[in-house]
Structure formats: C-alpha cells, structure tokens
Image 1 (spheres, rainbow, N blue to C red):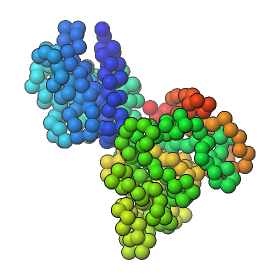
Image 2: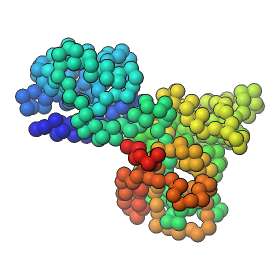
Image 3: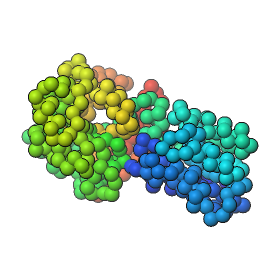
Image 4: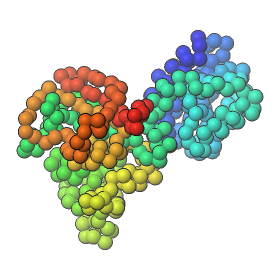
Length: 368
C-alpha cells in the first residue's frame, strides 16, 4: 500500500465530521505499523478530541515506530484540546504523512517543523488538492477572514423561483427538499431576506435529515418581521439573528429583541439596506465560517452582484412558468464576457429535478 491509499482512506473517514466540527476542519488520522492499520480516528465534534488523539487512543497496539497519516497538519498550540504534535512526539511515532498545511496562523508549518525537530520523518502534500477541497470552507475562512458563502435556490427550467403571484411551494421535489435540509446542516448559518420570511414563513431548521440546526440570519433593514414568524419561535432549538440598520433605541428593535431573538445593528449600504459584506465580516468574527443563502431574489442578486458568493447550488425542476419571479435579478452585466462563471463540480439527479453544484471562478482561477 502507498501513501496515497491511506490518505484516501483518511479523507473518506474525515467526512463523518461534516456539520459537527465547524469552525474546525474535518480531519482523520490513520496509524499504520508494519503494513497494518492499527488505529484510526476522526474529529467528531467541535471542542472534542482531534483526529490524531482519537487515533492514538483507539490504537490496538503500541504506536511507537508507526506511520501516522493525517489530511491536515497536526496542531501545535493549546486550544480547546492539547497540541496534537506533542502527543505524536510523546508516543514515539516515527513518520507522519500530511495531506496539506494548516492555514490557521497559529499552526501554519509550525506543527510540521516541531515534528521534524524531534526527529520524526515528515512528508507533506499527499493528495493536497483533495485535502483542500474537503475543507474548502475552513481554508476560505482562515485565508480571507470571511465566511464561505453558498447560494442555493430552486427554479423552473425558465429560471423562475416563484409565480408572478409569489407562489413558490413547491417548485422542487420532496427529495430536493431533503437535499436542501442536508445543505443547511452542513453550514453554520442560513440566511434569508425579510420578504422570504413574510411571504413563505419558513422555519429554516433541519427537520428532514439528521444534523444540527444552523443559526438563522434574517436580513430585515426596516424590522418588518412579524412577532409570530416561525423564525422567532423555538429559539432554544435554533437561534435567530435579525440584521437591521435600526438602532437599539428604536421601538421596533426593542419589540423584536423581547422575543429572545438577537437583533444587531449593521452599517447601511448605498441603498439604505444592510451592507451584506460587513454583515458577513461580523459573522466571521463570531466564528460563523459558512453561510447558506436561501433567498429571496433581492438578497441572491445582491450577493452575486458584489462577488460575495463562493458556491452556487441550483435545483432545476422540469417546469415552465413563463412570467414569474426570476432567481437572479439585474447584475448590470452588458457584455457576455463579463458573465459570472462557474466551475461545475457536480450535476446530480433528484427524482425529476437536476441539481447543479458549482464554484465561482474568480480572476480566471477556479476556487477549489
């Protein structure tokens, strides 16, 4: 067996932590001795043991002299858990194979260097692209200081997300709705505009699949949200943040805050609405590393127009509405060469629907 084989194994197991470890990355460690796997472990949840500690703890025999495979550089700092690099040294592991270097400035090559200084053989860059792709959210968050933004919508073949009268339930199939809930579980937060709350009254929780409920963010510059809105209910199960341009002295601000939801004042953009880029930055500072945008068209258009999105997931139903509400409004693009361009990662079937999952290409480079 070669190094790539065990790294592929680690990548497959690491995915079990998806939706539970954020803002930490998904990591798995596999320990091999004399051609046999003697231990493995993955990061199960935020603040829990890191993968290397789990693998050492689960090993069936002494790990001294073994090779440890891990998709991300072992940490070397004291955080929620002790440094993994020191544990590797203490247990006399002889060789460490690393998929990719950690972008966290507290680690970035330090873990690797500590291991080498202790006489441990270190190899890096094994399946590096695959390792970065697995943790695209983590790397984006660490390297830009901004959340990874996914735009998701369900549309008809002719690009409508609702009829002219505003009816949108349901454009996509039941299977696609489950897929949408799975996406929610994989993101730290889900965001919609106030029009979506007023028109559709969504819960924005994970009900159809297993997983944690994301933080619910409602962009409501004028605080028009009704007190009976579902996103203001069951706040013990799913927290809600209302982003507005109103200040804390406003009666509407105090009225909504009294429900238990958190109301935050944001800077206004040039149209008087919430400045989304500054809102995203504020969320990143609170360790929200990923946000799923579910609508409506005005929010989606603003995010795309301002190049704030990293990923787009479009669920396309085999229906035609003709006149209706478009998924994306005017982006002020007048030349085809200036079109927003995607690198399509996956095209899936969901019963009769087609799901297109892509990443935006920025400055002629593919983002992951």
